[in-house]
Structures are given as structure tokens and as C-alpha cells.
Image (cartoon, rainbow, N blue to C red; front, side, top):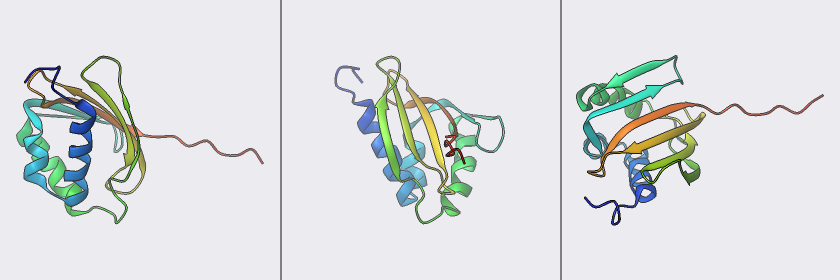
Length: 122
């Protein structure tokens, strides 16, 4: 796939739609065979390979909260094949996800973690 014809933000929106609809097969088809996911939400964990990601996403899609995978913001990341997504996690908690794409247009790597919210001074 040519990078000129590839819209990484649209790909992230498709990813978010697959998550929200619980479409595991569609979601996994978006990942490169050797993709990695670094999750800082439940601790620092790294998941490698599409097969392992299947286990990771299967339980999260099955246990999704009603407002899970609601988008708050999406921005281009650093570099032409990077996107930053702020959304609600499967638990409906605010997370930031950094996506990197392979030349094929598949997701090659994601790094996610909770978004810290500021508290008002009392």
C-alpha cells in the first residue's frame, strides 16, 4: 500500500469502530502479524503478535462498558505513519493510544496508557 494513498487517521477511526462494535476479527485484521501493544493501563505489559493480541482484545471486547471506545480526540502523531487517539477504554476510562503503522497500512505498534486528569485546587 502506498503511503500517499493511506489515511492513518481513517484507519484509527476504523479501529475504534471495530472496537465499539465488538468485531474482534475485523480488529485483528487491522494488525500486522508482528504487531506489538504496550499497555500502561493495567501495569506495564507488552503483547507481541496478532495471535497474542487476539487474547488481549477478546476479553476486553466481551467485557466492554456501555461508553467504551468513545472518541475524545484524534491527532496526527510524530511522523507520517503515527496517530494519537484519546478515547475511553473498554472500562470507559480515559486513555491515550499512540499508533504506528507499517508500510502495508497495518497497525505495527500501539502504546496506551491512562490520561491523568487535573484536579481543581480547593
